[in-house]
Each structure stands twice: as structure tokens, then as C-alpha cells.
Amino acid sequence: MCGIVGYTGHQPAQKIVIESLKKLEYRGYDSSGIATKEDKLVICKKEGPIANMESILPKSSSNLAIAHTRWATHGVPSDTNAHPHTDGDNSVAVVHNGTIDNYLAIRENLEKEGYNFKSESDSEVLPILISKYYAGDLVEALNKTLADIQGIFTIAVIHENHPDEIVAVRHETPLIIGVGNSENFIASDIYAVLKYTQQIVYPEDNQIVRVTPESIELFDFDLKSIDYEVETVEKYTEVAEKGGYEHFMLKEIFEQPKALQDSLTELLVDSPLERLGLNWKIGSISIVACGTSYHAGLVGKYVIEQLTAIPVSVGYSSEFRYAAPVQGVGGLLSSRPLVVLISQSGETADTLAAARSAKQQGCHTIAICNVPGSRITREVDGVIITKSGQEVGVAATKTFLTQMQALYALGVHLAFNSGSLDHPQLKLWESEIRKIPSKITQVLNNSEAIKALVPHFVKAKSAFFIGRNINYPLAMEGALKLKEISYIHAEGYPAGELKHGPLALLSKETPVLAIAMQDHTYSKLVSNIEEVSARSAPVITLCQKGDQQIPKISDSYFELPEIDPVLSPFTVAVFLQLLSYYVAHELGTEIDKPRNLAKSVTVE
Ligand code: F6R
Image 1 (tube, protein in one colour):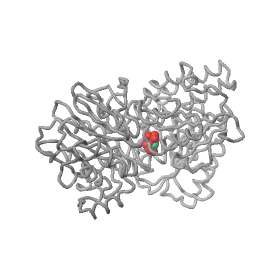
Image 2 (cartoon, protein in one colour):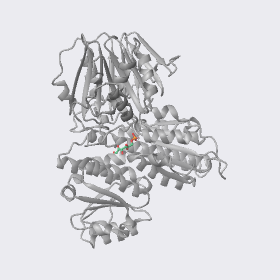
Image 3 (cartoon, protein in one colour):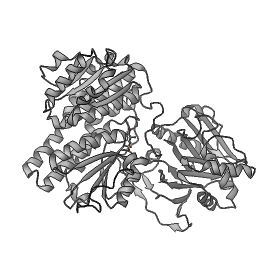
Image 4 (cartoon, rainbow, N blue to C red):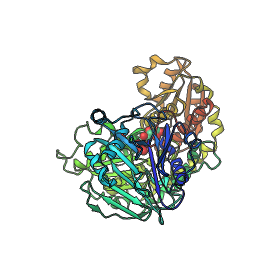
């Protein structure tokens, strides 16, 4: 969702913020804009890709700029609704990520006072309020504005009277400061500034920031000065490039063996439970996440319950607050419950809200996250950082695999801790987990065979993905991947559920992808495939190498390398990602930036 960058220093600001803004493109956006300080403030904004805005940029000599990519919430994507927004005199320019919930009432009052509005955006009230309250100090004017507004926001402001100053604030949406030599940056995330600096300040929620080339100041809402620390971001968090692949998504799919390898060390050594503060007998676990991360959580449930006998519930973050209190808190179970929050970005508003609710209920919280320093990692009691490297494609791929890997490692160590696994069994599991990268490499090496399945899907209006047990979440993930990048409607179903309704939709135009691993569910899945075939729907089956039965009952099939069925979600996932990619590629969709979607979903 919306991306914000700002620069104040000794270099030409326009070029720097445009480059930085491009590093935030992956978040998803529909228009972009920039404000620089020439003799007066100059605003340039345009609907569409950043290149549209770049093509109309005037020459600039400014050393100060703020810029923005907008993901429309209030008002259609358009030049006028794009940010920065200004007051009537163009003395203040503002970029905003989030939503101002009470903007209509504020706007009505301001209109009565004689102020005019140009756009439909909720954000336009901000420059008008700031300008109204401005009496020489931009921090004070922003602080007064904050007293009027409700919602969630990161706001960055420049004023024509302050040629080297950016003032910003965060409230439940991201903001970081990049620290340079006689220059400073603000941005929505570290990827925007990594080219220039690895020195980062992470302001907390409800802190106001003032940066100039030589100074960084943080204030609370009483305008008391706050101390801050400068942290150095690890080197591996490199800014992603396509590296010869046609799309980031394809590159990221092929990076998965490395992502799993890089993440292993943190997961399997150095007493992970101790590091996570998990030193008591855990009575229950709740896993909370959105989208693909939720699907990783569902896989984690099967693994952890099988290994430890600890009951695990999995819920969507956006529904967590409406659920009954977490089992064990103030109830009959005496042990402190564990809540595991999964978010690759660490900035998903729904998951952050769930984390806060879990903490309020007295739960121990840990996060599985791919972005060090992100919001969620700073709010929970323990953190597992997956080391996938930056994921740019909006559709999550490599972070999904490393999230699953983290949950397997967690399950194995919890089981060892509770005595359900002995030391040799722990070592055996660890060695199996270490083999996953080579297994998925075999799937990647067979991508031509996956491409051959594309004709089953390209003309379909709708498709079903079915699986049982640990591969039921994979059916859901396969359907999600297909719909988000190819725009073909798809549903993931437990294979046994088809006959309770969806079978009515099957026809020869409705492909059904079945995941049939050689586990205790196999014979039932074979029956489900027969039911589908009997309705003339094409069946494409994922089976294990050497399966004799599946080729006879499927229209097409793909053989996965031999692997313990409990580890099959990894190989299955890679197949499903590639299948969706090749279908979308054939259909010519915008694979890395699917319509309407954002990578970092910072509103609830
Ligand atoms: C789907 C996808 C989304 C995210 C979801 C959660 O491919 O990427 O469904 O998984 O928005 O995002 P994070 O993990 O950043 O909390």
C-alpha cells in the first residue's frame, strides 16, 4: 500500500526520492507524486506508474523532497487524488499512508470556514489543517492537527518556510528514518533507503519526527523530546533486482532453495526455544495471520499437533478480535497460552492489531517475519526471522516456504522440549528438514512439465484445488496463487467436501487439481478424483514419483520427488506457484503487481 519517502541533504533530492520510491513499487500503487522546494513548493503527480510522473517532472535544484505512491482508499486513482496534497496557498505539502476516519466531518467544518478542496481524498484535510495551525513551527502545527484527526496514518510534511526540514509522524502504519552523512531520509520501509544507508532509526507509534540534513529529533504528542537508537541493518537485506528473470515472482520462486538454506541456521541451532522465551509447558497455541501466511499457519497446525499433542488453533488476523478470549487466559488452563503471529512484511495492520489484542490478553507472543526491524518484530515477545531476502512480487512465494519451515522447526523443538521426541528423533527431523532445498530443486528443474499443464487452465473461468490433511492448506494456497495473478476464479477445498456442494459446479470447463500424496489419505483422495472424473471435469493430479494408479485416473499428472508426506507441502507449493505463474504468463497479466492488490497491507 501507499509508499512514502523523503530526503533532506546536500544532493539533488528529486533523483534520490524517485529512485527510492521505485524501491517501494512492490507495495502496490496506482499513482505517484513528488513535492520539492524550489523558490516555492512545486508539486508533480500523475496517475499510473512512476514513469508517468517522471515524464512530466520539471527541472529541480531542490535538496528537499517528499514523494508518494498511492493505493486508492478514498477516491478513484487519478492525478487529482494522487499525493502530495497541498493547502490552498501551496505553502504546505503532505503525503499520507493510512486513512483519516473522521475526514468528512473535518472537511465540512473547514468548508464552512471558507477552505476549498480539490480532491476526493481523505488526506487533503491534512495540509489544510496544518496550514491553519501553522505559526512558525511545523512540529507544533502537525501536533495540533493530530488532535483533530482519527484513523491510522504515517504523514510526512514539508513547508515552504523550512527549506531543509521534513516533519513526519506515525500512528499504526510504518515509518523509518535512514541516517546519512549530512543527509537524512524518511521512508515507509528500509528497502527504500538501503542503497544510501544501512543506519536506521525506527520511530515508535505516536512519535513525531523532525529531520534536517544534520539533525534527527523525535517527540511525543506532548512535544517532549525522546531519545532514539540508530540500528545497523544486516547486509543480507539487499535491495532486490530481477537478475535476468522476466518477473520478480519467477526469480523468487527459483530463489527458494537458497531462502530455506539461509533461514535454517537461526531455526535449528542456538536453543531456539530459549531465545523465544518459551521456557514453560505450553498448554495451547493460537496461530494468527492473513492470506498466504495464514495458509502456512494451517500447515503448522498439522505439524505441531502431530508432533507435540499441543492443541493449535489457526485464525485470520482480521477476525481475531471478535473471537472468544484465547484459551487458557483467565480460564481453566493454568498455562500461559502462546500466540504465533505470521507476517512476512511485519507491517500488516490486521496482524498487528491481533498481536496487540493477544498481548492485552496476557498471551506470550512470537512473530515469524521476514523483515527485521519491522513493526511486528518490535511489539512481540520473541521473533523468528526468516531469511528469504526481500520479496518484491506481490504474490508471496519464498516467504511462504520459509514460514512453513519455521513452523516445522518450532514444532520439532517444542516436541523435543516436552519429551515427545527424543534426541535421535530430533536429529532425524533436523536432517529431513535440511533435505527440503534439494527436493524442491528437483521440482524447479522440471518446470517444462509444469508448463505443459497450462492448457488445462487458460480457458477456464473457474478451477478447484483439492487436498486432504496437511495438503488441504496447500489446495487453498494453490487457489489463492492462481486467482491473484491469473484472475481465474479458483477455490481450495478439502477433497472430501466437494460432494457437499461444489460438485454442482463441475463440468468439462472446470479443471480440478488434486494433491494425492502417499499417506493415510491416499485411497480417499483416489475416490474423490473418481467422483470428479464422473462429472467430466478434467483432473490434473499431483502425485509422488512411481505412483501406478494416478496416471490411470487423471487427465494429466505431475510426479513430485519422493519425500516423507509430512514434508510434501514444500514440493507441492513450488509446483503450485510455478503452475500459477505459467498460466498467468500465458494470459499476459501483470504478474508482479496484480490489479487491486498491495504487498504491504497497512490498513485494516
Ligand atoms: C498472497 C499474499 C497475501 C499475504 C497477506 C499477508 O500471495 O501475499 O495474501 O500473504 O497479505 O501478508 P503478510 O505476510 O505480510 O502479513
